[in-house]
Length: 58
Image 1 (cartoon, rainbow, N blue to C red):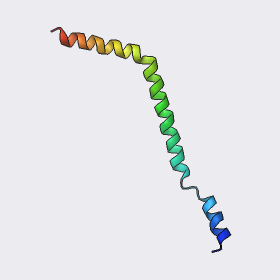
Image 2: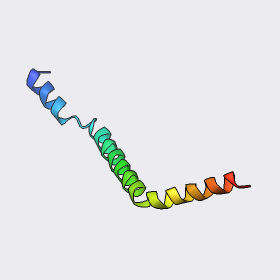
Image 3: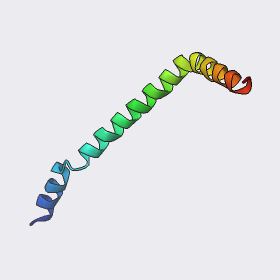
Image 4: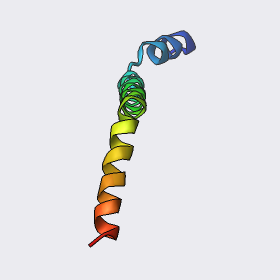
């Protein structure tokens, strides 16, 4: 196999493409989770506050 044929074969290899796509999906999910936490943080804080007050006052 000639050097040019090996180079062309290496350039056409799409094996790492799936990994890049999974990486983009993970980044998108992380951004969505952070956004959801920012939006719902007052409600979550209130919920934990009510639970803590119920646990501390029997």
